[in-house]
Length: 162
Image (cartoon, rainbow, N blue to C red; front, side, top):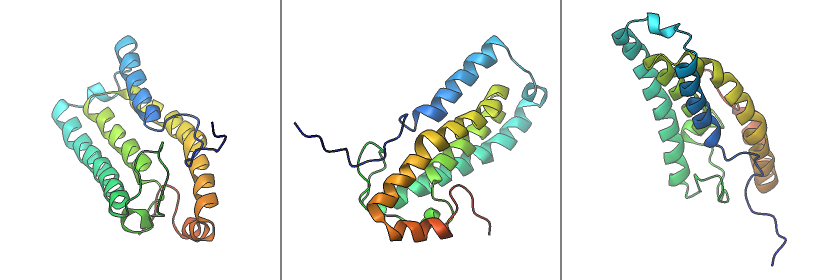
């Protein structure tokens, strides 16, 4: 039996559980206590407003996944990170998968009149930040040292201008 710590971030909650739980809770709350704010917008307009947001979020996530695969590192956070990816979408954000899912879920909220999702995305992002992202950053700093610190100094955690 080995006492070696696993080679991965010591996150509190498996990362995908957070945004998808927020979506499930939003659906339940919408069913139990609809707020009706988005429902006043016509279905077609909600689709035209929400679909580009969903597609943008999916594009951000897809770009992040492709970059990780291109460098031969794991997408699954339960597996070790084998390469520090700093190109492609990772030049704009250090967390494209989390940014992308958050953006996509906002679009889903608009399309399906899920007022609660727009409310719950904020605490979900807060939980994701403290339970996952900060812990992943510590792991990457331990694993990649100065290379990660330099990357962290020049690329924002979530959003970049330009």
